[in-house]
Image (tube, rainbow, N blue to C red; front, side, top):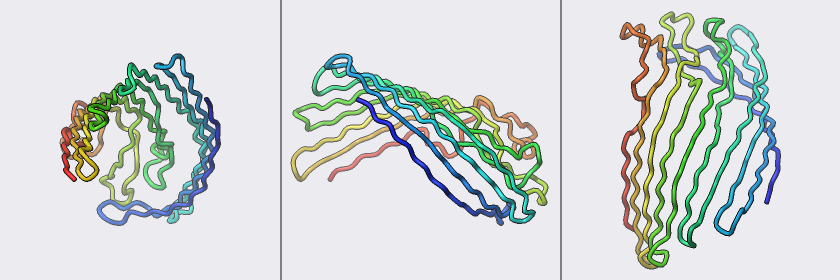
Length: 239
């Protein structure tokens, strides 16, 4: 089986940052045109493979409303995904996937000239997992493990010079290892329960932070965990 398609969007977005570190008010115009397709092949009754891909072209224009300075450019990306699924029985599915994701590049409306362009942020995600139905479909069990290779990460830098304010820079590379496990139980028409657990281990492999240099005296913060990341998450419910 196969599918093809196309999408288009046009967006105008105004922003300004006035608290803490000022960012000049700006108007960002984005035009995105993408084409995508998916092909699936059932090699046997139990084994299937699929390939998805998206190619997108994004035209971005950023105008600094303080200075009327305009920056514009074009960002292109190709985003593939591969999936293999194997069903040894009607109640069990095993799968593996690899996919590329991105955050398109952009421009800073303020900041030093060498940081005018913010390059595309990309990540590759690799995942293996299983889905199992048990006890005549009373239990639904899912388990997976994944690895994410995240490059060209974008971070906001607050310049100590208040006349410059804040801007974005490509400053990091991160590796993420994680695992998810969940069980859902439908005991009868009126009573159900669920349990899930997630583990995430993140580490900056490369991160040169000018903010860290100002505060700690050392710009290299590689080896540290990424901010705002919960290493362990647990959830349970009865309904």
